[in-house]
Image (cartoon, rainbow, N blue to C red):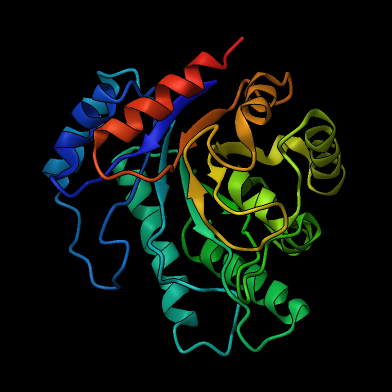
Length: 279
């Protein structure tokens, strides 16, 4: 398994490789713009080209772009629904310019909509996105913890979304371990992991799984509270991660950690712990 972190672009794209290599990354995730706002500047073509060259000269692969936090395609009643569709289209284009292979999106909040309405809203939005942007970037749906009115915390919800997407070869899954655990999938032990993988394969198909977000959970099983924690220090624990990352159905996948950080010290600690679990 190739491990990495979400790398900040706060000091520019050209510092990304340096930051990633300092942390011992083999793969990375990043934003292409401010993750907490709608406004953005067009990508500088020269900077994008230099970024791609820096990536090509490194050992970082694959690259995952993450959509900003504000877009929500799970409710057609939201005044930001169409703007959210636009945002995904824009980042699909930016992913291609920056040399990323995948774009990760949060499935969203249904707000006052029913579950079925939310599923239809997400699928309709994705179909609109694919009609407007034709490229090779794979869109990854990230499972949720089920906090508030989040949709996509149950595997069957995600399966229903995919069933309604026309170009299914352009869509895949980013599976967040903390979110799954908080949603009720017990990843702290062998039996729970095997049961989860069986359900995933039956409902969605493991071939759709392209990335693991490797995060421990600060809250208990089924809490539906989204709280990431350091590897081995939460409710999933070391044995859960040891079994996950060495599993023959998963160990070929990249794994990105989104563990809490104030400085690089936490990242270095989490990387050390994760690598110590590899068998």
